Image (cartoon, rainbow, N blue to C red; front, side, top):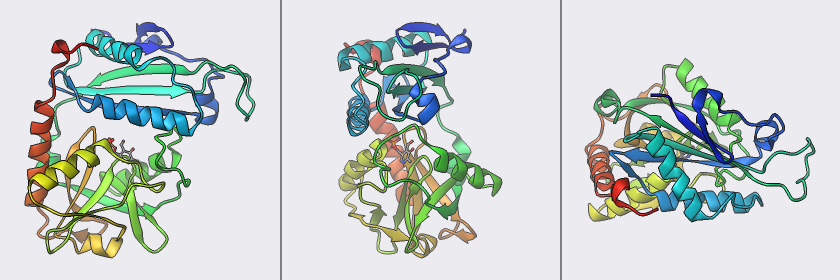
Length: 291
Ligand SMILES: Cc1ncc(COP(=O)(O)O)c(C=O)c1O
């Protein structure tokens, strides 16, 4: 079955899906995006992703491309046409197409693209064995709260991680403080069972999965400290994990050369992962939802 993409008003075969060479996303990375997880026929935290997209666009002074209702209809149609039950729905909005000039063009229409990609439910070995993290300097700009398509530091970080046989890069700022992963939020559990993660603000993206973990940790009676933590604290942590919409709660068992605790995924990490799966299972299936 051919994959179908939505491109500026049309559903087109993925392999023929193109945008104009003067789309400002292409030339300036002038746009924002979201990745919404589809799990067994449900879109997870769709509203929160659309809220975050609105916020990113607002911070960049890009007008929403259409009403939320229209956007949700297209999201459903892209999922339906790709017969995706589990996978990732990608949404990208750029400022639009105009002759290349840094300042905002007047009266420009934002461009909207959506793609869907089915993926296996979860890479089991990642959750059985945990993953390795490479720490790298955080060379990003000071507005990491905007989910901008400008991802060069993130992709360089992910590539450096891959070359070091690591799965993810955790970015480190002055003072040796970890901000977040190249495509995930970073967490540790201290020896006295406190969950620690960086506070939201301009240094990290406010992850939607991160937010769900807050509710789950509370249910389990754990305290979360939102504070900056250092690489040394992470090396010495009882548990470590990363969170994002595509891989939920992923145990971290090694950071650089430091093996975390006994080198096995931590119990709290695994409990949070299972709870997150139950949280997704409890979402309303798409076919029984009005857009
Ligand atoms: C830089 C960065 N931080 C954090 C996250 C996690 O966000 P979410 O849980 O909303 O997927 C992502 C997701 O892609 C990301 O790119």
